[in-house]
Image (cartoon, one colour):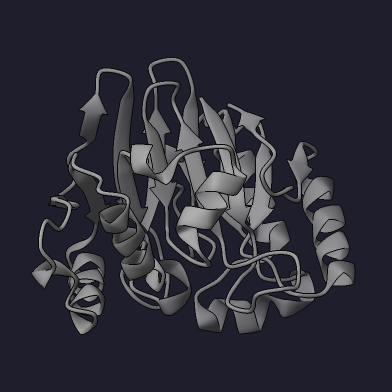
Length: 252
């Protein structure tokens, strides 16, 4: 299983990166987690054909995490995709996604691609025999879901946007790779807590408690200096911590 970062920024985009968006490839199935920037273009930059995308997971209904979904669906329609696209998320995230697509009357277009909307109900979603998706609740300013993907051999967990969790969800435990949001340093923790986010130090504490093998920080602030300070703070708590590189496959 491989992970590719298509973007790693928080709400503000930088010159080199859009908002956080992740591509996971099981070898047979590939899944996009959140939609920002120009998804079809970013998927191509990662070396994939957007027509082959199997599923989209929407972690929550904040603009930086789902605003580009209509563009993706529109591109797939123009490319005459015929197989269904799975879109998975909480009821609130999917309601927002449908409303956003409705602004552009996407589903009124002739021969629109079939969409399979799957509402998170606490049960795993098996796309095929090679990849299982589980969503779990985290603690953000609105309902937000973390993500666990397993292929029978490896475990990949993504925190999505969240305050530091008092109890680590079972899905995060023993992750071969944990991707955790981090919006600043320890000095920023009071403001981050109020906004529903974590610091790099808090992300590292979660990774350590969850007994993860590796931690990558995402949803980053603009300043490279702050990012470097975050990496140093997190590494002091959990040594196997890094800042992501875009379009570089990470083996899980």
